[in-house]
Structures are given as structure tokens and as C-alpha cells.
Image (cartoon, rainbow, N blue to C red; front, side):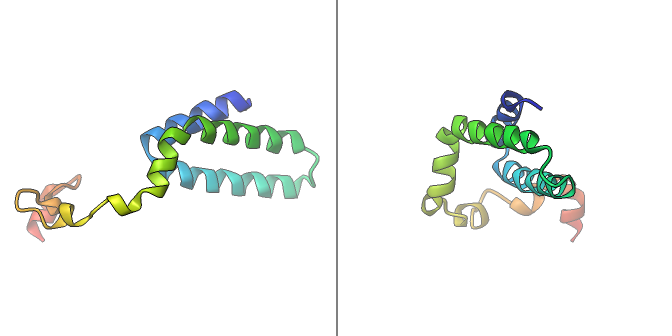
Length: 101
């Protein structure tokens, strides 16, 4: 795929779900590394275009990525678990199963 398509896809994935985007980067990077090893570097242009697309995608989503990765001290999970009004145990996809347990 073209670097522009990779960049747009990665930017949209980062902006929708950061953890999925980082996991996809690891998985696709591993697949491309195995592909390059099996073909003994003959298709370097595929890896290079992917790397350029990843760089552009991370750069265009950096306005969201930088604060999300560096400001962990501002997030308090106690507000999620010790709330009198929020019952997080019943917020899953199938609340009937969590209610019965």
C-alpha cells in the first residue's frame, strides 16, 4: 500500500483506539520483518513505504499521541472503581452474566 494510505489508516486507528493502534504496529511490523527475511531484502521498497507511512501517521496523530502517552499521572482509576453511582462491573457487553456472578 501507498505511504499515504498507511498514514491515514494509522492516524484514524490511533484517534479511535490507541491500544489497538500500537498492537497493530507491532503485529504488522513483525509480519513485514518476517516477509523481508524470507525474501532476503529484495523487496526493500515495501518495508520503506510502510515505514514512511507509519512515520507520517504517527506525526499526524502526535497531537493526541503525545499527551496520551506522557500524562498518566493525571488519570486516577480510583474514580472508576470507588464511585458510589458507577457500577463498572455491570458495564460490560453482557451485564446479565456479571450480575449473576
